[in-house]
Image (tube, rainbow, N blue to C red; front, side):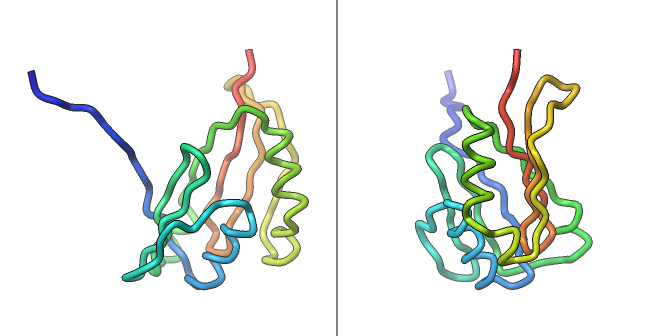
Length: 122
């Protein structure tokens, strides 16, 4: 029987200004584990992505990432307290209950990529 085990999946996230975006994600709380060749590897526990030094504006502004967390209120507080909304002029929404049984909030990065950070509700 073939081994089809998946060990990881990561998205390549575009950045208009690579240095600014790297700092933004560090300020949010992600760890930059490596940086080279125009790609920076970021992670936080089981969540990971590759930030790339490349951006097509129409792509970045229509790019969305969903990150499922255990405590959406704690994450919102972490992002709010980091000051990234003010420092980078990005949007941070309030936590809202969605019709798909999730409480989430939205955060845009400096390139226009939208993150939906949420928690399932029963």
